[in-house]
Figure 1: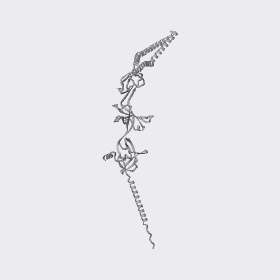
Figure 2 (figure 1 turned 180 degrees about the vertical axis):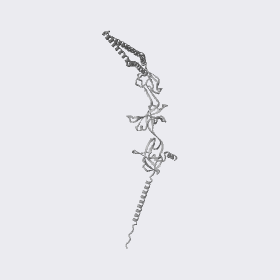
Figure 3 (figure 1 turned 45 degrees about the vertical axis):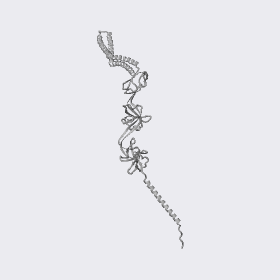
Figure 4 (figure 1 turned 135 degrees about the vertical axis):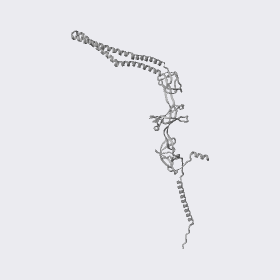
Length: 433
């Protein structure tokens, strides 16, 4: 009978321990894998700000820097060079249209005007006398001369006819008949000359005589008016209502022709001139409401658009626009730099979202819609006008939707989200602690 081999109990224990260790490792790995899977499935929700899509009134505004100008301005430039005799206003004086502001030395001009006035009055008297007396008398004399020539022609014709009969009867010599013929020819010629003179006066001569007399009268009148105008140039008057802003000379100094002597501005209204891009100018029109904001004033000044230039500025390829505002207190000073804001379009009931909620990819615009499943869903939208931090949504959303406001940037599609505490709520909780 063979003896049974002895069992190595030490090796058995070792194998059993190794098996238990392997089983335990597998269990640990399996548990770890399961925990990792559970953690992946249960990713934490991203805190974001959720805002409702609301209806509101929006205004699309175009803003730009501008410079103020007076609504009207006139630089008074004398047409003659002469010393300043006197000023009737100072800088800051308010003036009316037509008011005399300054007088230049004009004694020589006054004398010339007086001389030409005398010549004009003399020519006027001559013209009146010529049209009233001389020309009618000449016409009457021509008519009498024509009548006398006709009577003489008729008499000579009778004498010639009578002598011709006597000559044919042999009772008169040929010589006397020939003399009667010569007298008849002379009478006929005189009559034709007188008649032509009368016809000339009636047709052309009378008109030319009147034109000659009238021409002399008008020439004298023109010289007198020119001298009076030269005298008038020595008086400087304001063409507009306004205030005197410049007066560089003093009485006695020489005023040069073509150099401004006084400057008058109408500052009851001001015009802000700005240059804006062509795309922005296309949305504006004359009459649009606007505002002018000036430094040192809390409130803007109401205004309106009065000009949108029909052409581009060749230097900057921008469009010049004018915005006009009332300035009853004179607070807005011409030459100041201001800001203008013009309302291009208005929408009464627009669907709006914060501008922070918009995401752009190329030419497309998206928002992250906060769904009822507590996940953010990416959705394409079409936007309209902007008003500050609010944007109009034309397509893609409804008034009942909610979108991710702050925190949408970089958020993957279908991410789990939770509403973050508002800043004021967080500050309140910190205060309680």
